[in-house]
Image (cartoon, rainbow, N blue to C red; front, side, top):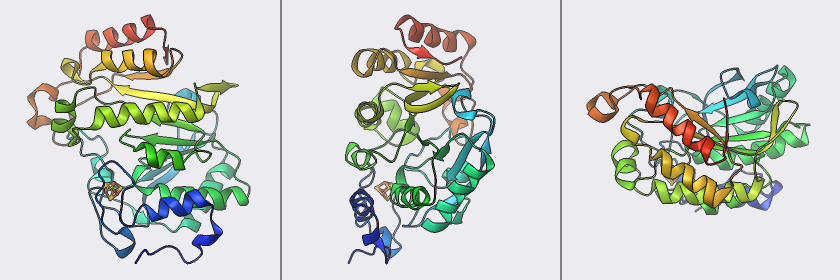
Amino acid sequence: MTILPANIESFSKPVQQLWERMNPCTLCPRQCKINRGKGQMGFCGIGDRPLVSSVGPHFGEESVLVGGGGSGTIFFAGCNLGCVFCQNFDISHNRAGRKMTIEKLAQAMLGLQDYGCSNINFVTPTHVVAAITAAIELAQKEGLKLPTVYNTGGYDSVETLKLLEGFVDIYMPDMKYADSKVAEELSAAPDYPQVNFAAVKEMHRQVGDLQVKDGLATRGLLVRHLVLPENLAGSFEVIDFLAEQVSAKTTINVMGQYRSCYKASSHPKINRRPTFEEIESVRKYAIEKGLNVLD
Ligand code: SF4
């Protein structure tokens, strides 16, 4: 039997459909097919209620998300990826956090708005989208006006993303790899490149290129790409894909802050920071291809 919140009928069809997709769970490309409503857990390790690690203004995000009041981040524990270099492994893999009801999640969003945050930034949302969309609906009824940011590792299925249309204003996916073998070795997700490329196309279809007003993002796609040593992130392919198959005006943050964390020390190729030349060659290539590269 599918277990849904008692008042599920009061939510919109997409929210109901997302909840159904947890029982059995096909929310993300892992397709674990376990019943999260019955307390079963799949790869992400989270049941049908989200585990929230932290809520608060964050000033370390991209400047177009920060503004005067910070980006209102809600950091979810658990993850559908298994990155050996995870920089948040306490939250993502050790699942540090507290369970939150949909009502509390909605209150958290309204609290961030009252605090003066520039947006509501859902960090690692893929495995808890049913609760997030339900909470957005509740919060909007109570006056939530801020743009929402879907801040994802980028391992998202197109079918689920389609149900998020209208709930998300700004998609901020990682594009981690262009090579299946690397994705398997470093994130236990051999299909990451094909899944991720399709997901980014769907995200762009929904919200288009990034729009910025008075220095703050209001809607659109903002891609994050973390440069790895030895071009393991397939940076040039990722850039070609964006420029040629998504939009030549795509906004991208080429990130150079990779450092060896978690289990990365057992993988010799990624047991070092990328060099200045490795990072700059990617930035330069993205600029040459015409992308909007953030400073
Ligand atoms: S959301 Fe979690 S349980 Fe569901 S398919 Fe993905 S990893 Fe598995």
